[in-house]
Amino acid sequence: MGYLTGSESLKPLLPEYTQRVIGFQGDEITEYRIYRMLAGAYGADSNAQVLSKMADQELGHYRIWKSYTGIDVAPSMLKVLGYYLLARILGLTFTIKLMEGGEQGAIRRYQEFSGRIPDIEGIIEDEERHEMEIIGLLDEERLHYVGSIVLGLNDALVEFTGSLAGFTFALQDTRIIAAVGSIMGIAAALSMAASEYLSQKSYPSGRRPKKAALYTGLAYILTVLILVLPFLLLSNPFIALGGTLLFAVLIIICFTYYTSVAEGLPFGTRFLEMAALSLGIAGVSFIIGLLIRVVFQVEV
Image (tube, one colour):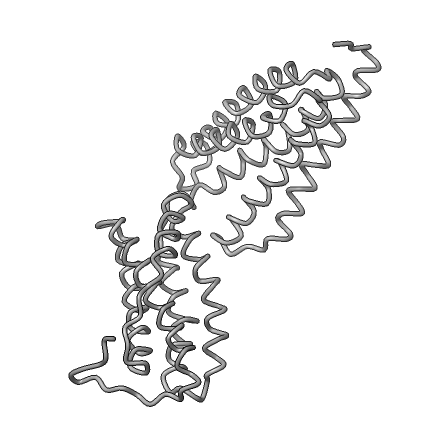
């Protein structure tokens, strides 16, 4: 055990509080290690300075708790590695805001000790105020292009899901549906990317036209590949369509959750809006496909 030495002195703590405070101490040192590791990954980037400030704040909280327990507590390296990988894959802002969402639970736990531990009020104030101010200083490129990603993703979900539904009843052959759908989807992705490029060139929004077009096109193509996958794996076109609709809902859930966390937007309203548009148009297209098959007497 690493008891306090030198000018530091152990503060009195009721025995029944000890384990809870050790838990708080472990959370703070874990977050310190996460922020410090991320700061190292960003090198001389301005975000590294922000992350270093956040790490210093967590270390300060850890030392306050240590002044009560008198022991060193090891960080949860599994959690450190998990959040580090999440930040590298899904972005810094998303990951830190996800962490700070967990901090709300920590604040509620801290508030249980309000008036019982002298330093607790200052820690609560830090958690509620300083960290959100520091997060506001983060500048992450991918968030500047969320609008372009939404454009590609939403168009692919709405248009392509509807097209596959129409093809299902009109053609009723999974291989043909997959082939026609893929050709149409890739062509539409290129068209959307070109439109986004021209839009950014004509009406500058601070985003680079080429990069905005790339985000839009990639979002569209990735969505197309996921939605057409059931038709490549299954032989029954109606079951495959059900798989496509399921994937569409999962994509909407994942992306809506990402944007709601990263941008602080309400999840429920955005999810319902996107799901209603995609599935509603798919239903209409399914009926249109049935009518086309009957009117034009399509037999495949």
